[in-house]
Structures are given as structure tokens and as C-alpha cells.
Image (cartoon, rainbow, N blue to C red; front, side, top):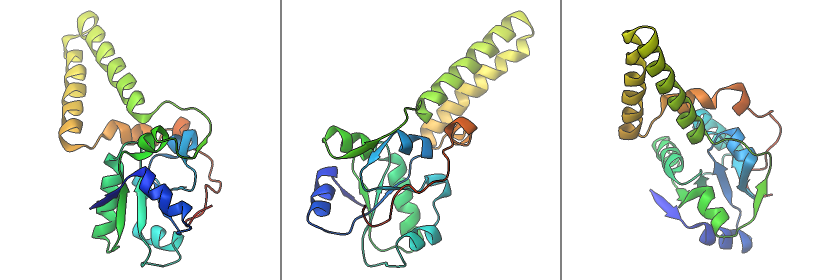
Length: 185
């Protein structure tokens, strides 16, 4: 899989190249901050037919993928390459690196990141299970054990079921309005 730095991608855009930049974060994350000329296509709903439609069926131009820090972008690139797209490029460091480089971003409503939501939910479940295990019934101690095992599994596989579930919660949804165009502003 190919990668490009945010600065190099922005230079290509400034030279007048038509850039197809897909942000694969959740709509709520995208709403908070995103690269100026990106379009939101969340990883969980990323499908090759949609990408092809957004790019007017033009398979010759590279497809650039960005996420928060690079992990989901790499997964999206792998998915698109497996679907037969020839030139898919991950933006190294994601939106975090884009912003740190001082490149143009669009800022919107603040949100709590999915990663923080997972930490909050896991912490509350562990505390609840521990309290219930101590005061109600020792069987409740299995809840913190399950949460711990799930977090370890998420770490080993780089796939978080709780994160995917939280991403579908109503507070993480954004109304379906136009979020940009495929090939620039």
C-alpha cells in the first residue's frame, strides 16, 4: 500500500491536480474537523460501488484515504485494493498530521472521539461490574473480566466491537447533508 504525507498531497492539490480525498472516519468525527477538500465515506459503510460512483467511474486517478491517524485509512486502502482499485494511497498520520502541518481544515461541532467513548464505557462497565460483584453477587465479577478480554482482543486484532457499536449510537450520527465533492471543492 502506498502512502503520502499531508504536505505532499496538499502540494499536489495546489498545483491544480484533481484530488479525490476520502475521509473514512465517523460522520461525527468528520463534522468536528476534516481536511478542506475531503469527502466523508465512513469505513463501516465504505463500499467499492459508492467510491466508483463518487469518482464518476474514473479509475485512472489516484484515490487518497485519510482517517484520524492512519489505522482506519490503511484498512480502507486494503479494502479498495482488494476490490480492484489500482491506485489507492493512505495519507500518513491522518487528519491529526494534516492539522499539525497547518494545512487547511474545516472545523465544526466538537464531539467526543469514539476512542474516548470506548474508554469511558469500558471504565464504567468495569466499575459497575466490580461494585455489583462485591455488593450483590460474585457472578457480576465476570463483567469486568469480559470487558478486559474484549479490550485485549481489540488490541490484538485492531478491531473494536464496542467502538463499532458506539459509532452507531444516535449521538454519533450526523444529518445526511452534502459533505463535499469527490474531486476537490
